[in-house]
Structure formats: structure tokens, C-alpha cells
Length: 424
Image (cartoon, rainbow, N blue to C red; front, side):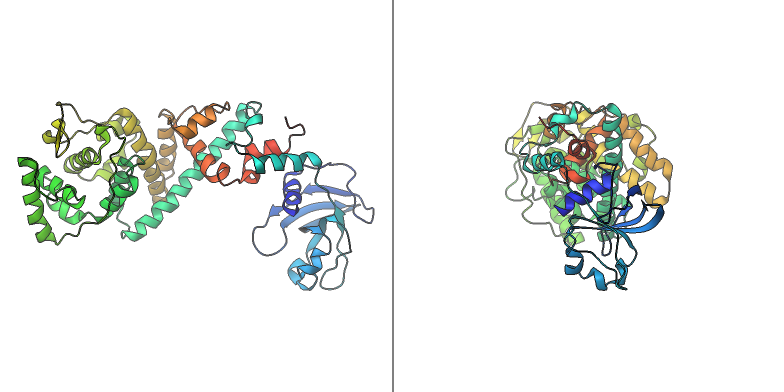
């Protein structure tokens, strides 16, 4: 249970009075130090008063004192600056490489901490700490959610940076690829990303003013212009793609695996590609236009897109439908802003050293309604209700990076649960 000793030391969840070394000297912890996750002592720069002397240095923690020798610390000068050794069992004294004894203190894990830890570890319900969430103050909840909002955007920035490297730091192309992925709205996200990553953007740029040629390239690269034509428009696209494929030596990706099962027709990949083609055709310099938007309403204007006329009466090439408007719904636009625009705005702000852009990313999230998915509904059942998209993004980060990975030790809600002395 060495990790539990680490935890109670870091968070000072132990009796603060009558602390003594094994030699009977009084111990007062002024600062437990900074947790070291690399090689070397467990905590750096601790401040501890032992009897009447203030010590500043490092702290090492073991289950048994003899682990000091088992790990070879007695011969490692990196441990000569250890001012206090903490253990559960003091089965020997410990010495530095020069033979000096290190002050040592026995610290046992309180039973309620062990019980709380076992409850979190064995919990089959997410979040495992659900029983205490309704008791937390609004300040505790909101401060943790605010930190998670920043963490989520930083994680997304790292992912975007990796993608940018693969595409020669072309922000415009990578923005469209990311946008396309999110047009898949989860189900077809991977297929859309592979498709968009293979699109010949410089060829598309040359034909941007012609929606038929844009559609022919996009539908051809998606594999929807194969076999026999279903109607005249389908035949026209196939002929145009055949010409452009030869002209630009296009190679479409194989096995995209488009999914249509149990999907509303308005969300079919053919409709989404038609919307993306319409957007590409009408919004030259899309990335720059989006980055310049200062309000959510301005973003709504950009993404308030439809399709070419053919798709107002078709769901697929082989299926006609009653004529209807194929405009994006506000809910869909909200998701595109949350998952594409906001991460790019934040990442581009970091890239440019522009704090106003980073701040605007958070402002957009705060002005959009929270997402409605199974993760959010699960939190609402335990009295953690998001006020806006910033909160819902934080809860998604909390679920995926902490709850599902059982990283309760690193979660502020987990901390509140761990220090609770009565477990129901």
C-alpha cells in the first residue's frame, strides 16, 4: 500500500498532531513537497521541522524501511538530500551514502482511507464516487470542471499538432480533415477522416467554383461513383470523376466502411459529403473565416449550409425522397463548433501566441448549450449538471481520462471521496 502512503502524505490526510520520528523527535510538516514522477526521491523541496530544526529537502516513502536498501538508495548520492524517510514498518534504520542516518517516521494508512480506496477500486458504476457528489459544494465542482476544460483543450491541441506535422503544417487542409471527421458524428468519424485525408486539395482548389466537379471528386474518392449509374446526375458525376481521376492521377482509399444501419437518412454519409462539398464550394479560405469569427452567431452563419439541388430530393444515389431542405441543424452546428472550431481556435491561439483567441475558445463553449449524450446523462443522475458546453466537455474529459481509467487518485472528486470518514 505504498501508493496510499504517497497519497495521504501528498494531501496531508493524516493526523496533524503528535507526529514523531522513530527516535521520538517531534515532526511538523510545513510543506510535503512536490511529487516526483521520475527517478529520484518521491517528493522534492519539502519543508519539515524536526524538533527545533527546519529542514528543506526531499522525502522518500516505502512500505518497509528495508526497501531503502533493497532499492539501493544507501549507495545513491541522489538520496543524500532526503530529510525524512516515511514507512509503514520501521524494520531497520536507513543511512545515506556517507553513513549518516536519515530521520525516519512511521505512517500508517487510516482504515477509512483503505476502505474508501477499496470502494473506488471495486466500483462497477461510473463514477465510482457517486455517493458523495451531491454533497460537494458548487465551488468544488466548478473549480474541477474548469481545470478539466483546460486539460481537454490542451489534449486536443497535442492531437492537432501531430496531425499538422503529417500534413506539412497546412492549417486549412487539416481543419477540413478534422471538420470532415466530425461530420461523421461518431458513427462514420473514422471513415470520414480517412476519406478527407486522401482528398487532393490542390486539385479541388482549381475547381472550387464548380460544384459538380467538387462533388465528382468528393463522391468519387468516397467510392460512391462505382458500378452502373442510377440516374442522369449520377452518370454525369461518374463521367466527370473519370476525367478528373485521370487528370490528377487520383487514388481513392479502399475499405472506408461507410455505415448506414440504424441511421437517420439525413445523416447518411452521402448527405454529409454533399454538405461538405457545398461548404467547400461556397467558403473559400474557410479556416481563416472561422478563426476571424468573434461570436457564435457568426459561426452559425458560416455553417448554415445546405446541399446542391440534387440532394434536396435524394438520400443516396439510388433513393429518391420528398423534396426537403438539407441545411445543418443547430444541434449539429453546435457539435461542429465544440469539436472542431473551438480546438482549432485554441490551438491556433497557442501557435500564434494570441491569448485572445484562446480566451475566445472558452467563451464560445460557455455560450453553447451542453451536449446531450450518455456520458452527460450519467453525470446528471448523480447531481452534476452541466450549465454549458464547457462543462459537458469537462465531464467527457473526466469520464474518459479519469473514471474509465480508474485514476481516482488524480481526481478532485476522488480526493473528496478518499478523505471522507464515513462510507455509506
